[in-house]
Length: 152
Ligand SMILES: Nc1nc2c(c(=O)[nH]1)N[C@H]1C(S)=C(S)[C@@H](COP(=O)(O)O)O[C@H]1N2
Ligand SMILES: [Mo]
Image (cartoon, rainbow, N blue to C red):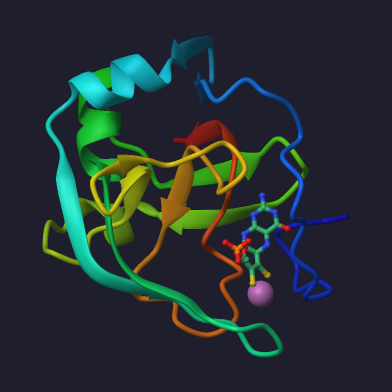
C-alpha cells in the first residue's frame, strides 16, 4: 500500500508487534525513542478529543496526553526540516509539514501515550499520532508510530 496516497478506508485493529518504541530517522542517523524517554519529555494534553470517522463509530471524547511533535523534534533532532513522514509498523502513515508542527497551541500535533490519565495500551495505538485539525476519516491519527522520517 502506498500510504501517502488516498487509500481504502479500512482501519487495522491489530498492533504489528509489542515494541512501542519509535525511531527518528535523519538523512544520516537513526535515534531510538522509547516510551519511557517520551514520557520524560515535557507533556501536553489535548482535552475532549474525538477520533471521528465516516463508516465507523467515533471514539471519545477523551483527554489525550503526550508530547508535541514540535517538542520531540526539538529534543531529538533540532534542525530546519521541511516535513516529517510519520510511519506505523503496519505500513500506515501520514506526511506532516513543518508549518503544521511549528506552531504551538492546545491543538498541536501530538504523540500520545496517555488517555484520560491512564497509559495508552499498545492495542489502542501506543504511540499514536494525533492531528487535531484532521476530523474527517482519521487517516492521520496514526496508531503504532514506528518511524518519524525527517526531510530536509
Ligand atoms: N497504524 C494505523 N493507524 C491507523 C489506521 C491503520 O489502519 N493503521 N487506520 C486509521 C483509520 S482509517 C481510523 S478510522 C482510525 C481508527 O482508530 P481506532 O482503531 O482507534 O478506532 O485509525 C487510523 N489510524
Ligand atoms: Mo477511518
